[in-house]
Length: 156
Ligand code: ATP
Ligand code: MG
Image 1: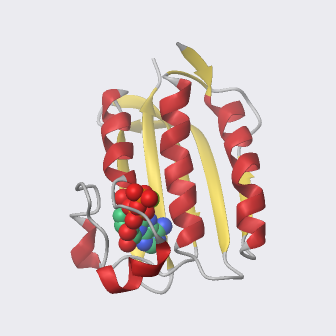
Image 2 (image 1 turned 60 degrees about the vertical axis):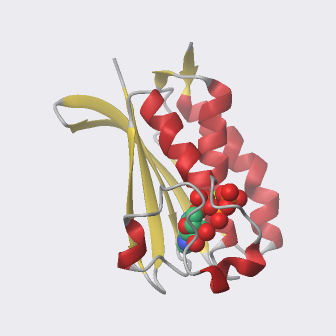
């Protein structure tokens, strides 16, 4: 079904805003305000971004910033995608963990995530759902600096 991804994201960011503010985090959504139509399952897409945003909130200390940036047209792998990045100024992810991040039940350094709840399933589910939509996810991270997840969804 066609959905307006821009409007959907605006709503999702709005929904998690309270939780972010309670933790002293600022969350912002940047887009050019134009509708972006993608063929996707609204509930599954929502699940993906809720997980990315919940992670950003969970793994960013008080005073941090989270930004959601939407770009309408990106040419990659010879196809056209819309891309959405979720960036935080949080604890980051060590380079050696990046390759395992999308594995089921994988959590970085159990000791540090022990107090943050979570099962380590969120990213593997997100990865599967985005692939099922013909897209892909990339991650860039710097320990102590922050993490950016970018979701690519095909435009047809
Ligand atoms: P669940 O999503 O099932 O509640 P979870 O958040 O631990 O649990 P994932 O969402 O799959 O599981 O994330 C896997 C691990 O990746 C996390 O435990 C955390 O160590 C690391 N991680 C994910 N997102 C971030 C982030 N934005 N900043 C720092 N570390 C992150
Ligand atoms: Mg998670």
